Amino acid sequence: MICSLFLLMESVSGLLMSEPWLIGGKSDRGQIDLNFNAGDLSSSSGNVGGTNPHILVDLTTIGIMILTLTGIIMSVLALRARRKSRKRNCETLHKPGWEGNEDR
Image (cartoon, rainbow, N blue to C red; front, side, top):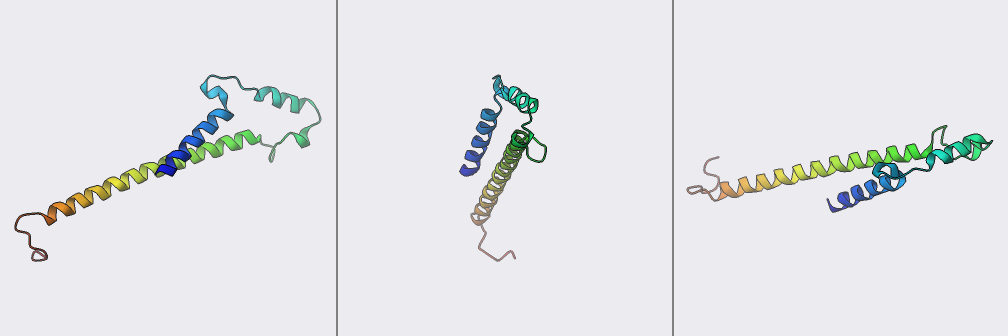
């Protein structure tokens, strides 16, 4: 659970650092893309399969955040269910007049 929280914090902070416009900052990415497209630098522009790698990194980061959040939610639900089951088992063991397996 702790590792999941650290992974979530790191992915959110990484996304915010790579995309400063999300928190009101200015992005210089538009100028960089224009400079690469202006010249004959298509082979060294850093595109992966014709796609800007920043978009791929952002999508991967968002995917990691979604998977981490669903993992945290499932862990919390499993821990709650375990606590309820232990509480229920503890209550049945301490019922007055219950002597073990006589009811079964």
